[in-house]
Image (cartoon, rainbow, N blue to C red; front, side, top):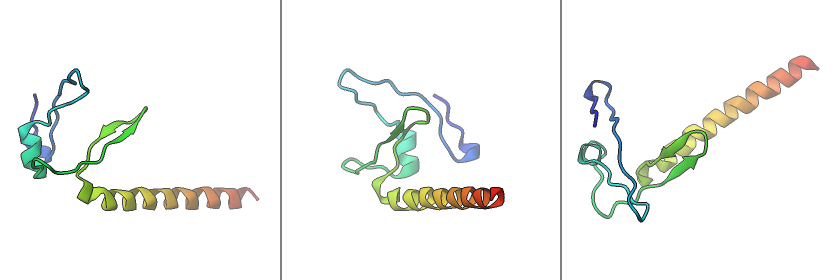
Length: 84
């Protein structure tokens, strides 16, 4: 496994077990303060892959997604207005 502390992140690999379970590496659990019993949210997309943020961060993530969508809608509306 690779651990790149210089960029403040982590890259590694995990193996999916027979029951579909994975083990989150200790370095990642420590970095994100994940403890036994914590709830994580599974985000998956066929093109983007899987993200597993802690549930207490989901509100912040949803705000970022919403802001991005609003900006995109604004750009599309402006482009539609320029064409008219």
